[in-house]
Amino acid sequence: MQDQNITKILIPEDEVKAIVKRLGAEITAHYGQLPRELMVIGLLRGSFIFMADLVRKIELPLVVDFMTVSSYGDGTISSGDVKIVMDLDSSVEDRDILLVEDIVDTGRTFSKVIRMMSNRSPRSLKVCTFLNKPEARVADVQIDFCGTDIPNEFVVGYGLDFAQGYRHLPYVGVLDPS
Ligand code: IMP
Ligand code: MG
Image (cartoon, rainbow, N blue to C red; front, side, top):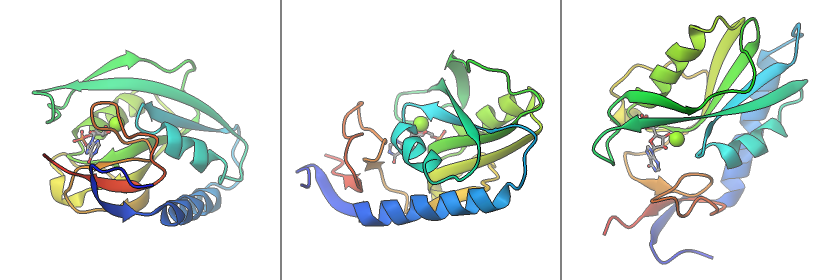
């Protein structure tokens, strides 16, 4: 089923699955023996579907936590002024942290969150994103595990929203701008 406002399917469901499987294998291979479980931290709400699928492809002992941040700007453009709306339940100090994001666009949000997390003295900090828009980058972000690069278009589905809608689509599609 394709929504009438989706002009193009950019990443069909089977490709989404293949990307997540590959990322899970990369992450599993990267971490050998860890002193404690890997702590996988998802940024809400965009990462919730990706995160749920990804952790099931990581073959390591792990725990999950979530945080919600909001960036204030003129609505569609993120200002880079990131505020924590809901913080983590647990401490990241001395833990091996994997931060999970749905998409890195300008990089403003993720770069701030990465800085906040590294100030909390984790044992290690790696970042994973499902989608990456390199053409839109303004703030520098070192991505350790990247699902796939996409062109500079507004996409929805697989957790990504427009006005909170479309998150449940099992594929990634380009939304009709009109
Ligand atoms: P950034 O700070 O510009 O990197 O933007 C980060 C946030 O903007 C992401 O976590 C998304 O929530 C949102 N975002 C950026 N591009 C898109 C898109 O194409 N579709 C839906 N949300 C997006
Ligand atoms: Mg987001």
